[in-house]
Length: 156
Image (cartoon, rainbow, N blue to C red; front, side, top):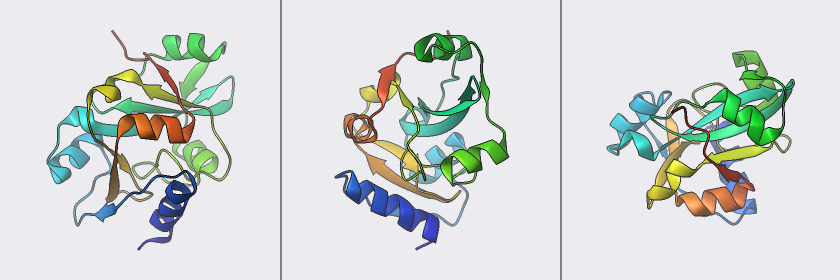
């Protein structure tokens, strides 16, 4: 198992989550690639998106087809400005590369906001540390274990 995925597995155990990491020959870097590889709907894919809220990194766990409304996110977190983090800022904040950023296992705690649309599914799939590894988890368990705030951040 890749060291990045091992880090995710260990973080999940520490949070009381039992996960099985699946590795694919093809990329699961994008939400659509992940949905196609796994054979699930795009909505069941958890996108781990890093934003900077007044220059502080925050993590949004969004449902695959949803775009995050940065104005809603700014109001939710009480920030003047919210913008997408660069690839370098994502790696610095999470310890993982874009396309493999998991919802847990980061070097330091990040504020996490959880797309309420994910709650309509029995099971969702999230990146497991690399652009071709994923794991399944019940969305409510993921939100609870990660300490996420459940919110409506979807663009209308």
